[in-house]
Length: 389
Length: 163
Image (tube, chains in turn yellow, brown):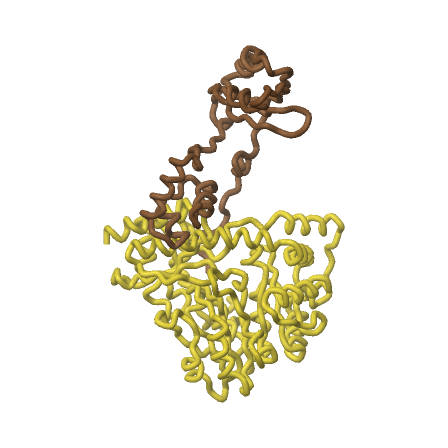
């Protein structure tokens, strides 16, 4: 008999499984669930993008591309980033196409983290940062952002977390699950702390396209003095409804991008070729489709937020991503109890805020990547649930 | 028009199920105010009605419909208005539009059977004095109506929860 405990890496074994595994296992095996639980768009990938993928297959474009990605795609990524966020990159030296934003985050963390290095992670946030830092041998330093500050990272919180060992700051805005964004003024304050320090920002901007209202997304790389200390990560999954295509990218200083590309080259070779051709089309001709989806998300967002507030679950206006993050503190239940009981009694699936870090206690995440009718039905069932508590 | 009218109308055009409360949430306005405004829009005839899009082909029910192209001699002084209004009165007629091109009025007609539709065209439409010619095209299958796809069977393949 082989002793797997001697085989499996201690670092890997000690990593907690993502989210709240038991709850997820139950939720995903239940039938007839009215879910507000997923982190991906309900829209299909716009047809012209799918068509571009099909065309590339018909032409037999099925080989590896260069490690960095197709030249045409790298060029479009840089044009898009300049057009949308006002940051310009050299597509030959400062850009890399990755397998989703996730690979870019992983490679960026690995490229900068040495054992004992600290990486600052604001939470509640997406679940991958902490395990990735641990896998890279680093130490995650968690900042718990607060509802009073609209779940933004503040200058004071950052200053309190920085030590001589701080190597990187993960900046996950627009934020899954809180829907928080950082505007120019908020970012200026963060930049003020970081300028003059040897700390790199890994800015996960996967929801950049999905901001609502007056304040649109601002990249920290566009703030003075920050481009040289930022690895900007974005991708196609959320904005273009392309989750399954696994397309993302990283942009940053050539010195770092060379190293990130090395990791990518050995671990991945290149991002999927079909997806790369499809992604070119997305950047070239899908502004209208993105606009249409955004408008739809905005309507649902408003209906959902107003719905939660009417039910007595206080819900701030989420300004980005596609989640509402209402407080369930008034029920006296923990996030996990709330979600589990709601699931069993009414068949509605939400995600406990604690899946995104301890700071998520007292909150639940509800995605509005669902039709209007679906959202209304879920809200009405949540209303019944609250009345029976 | 009141400032929000167009947005109210666009939302209702997209989904007649939107309540005044829903629209108020989307527009950041008061539900009572929106409800009152919708009522005014209905009374002034800007909102003409609400209907459902139904895929009757899924039911075992006899239905037939056709698009009829009509050539019409316009009447002095009234042009096509008089005859179009007259045709619109028939309960068998679903829609009447004046069109550009090789004919004048495009009329959709519904009935229980092909035969019923044919009879209606022959006995009613073709016998109107100003109608000089009719061409009947039976609808064989509907794929999309009022922006709603009738043939797509797209299901939500996503898990119940994912991060």
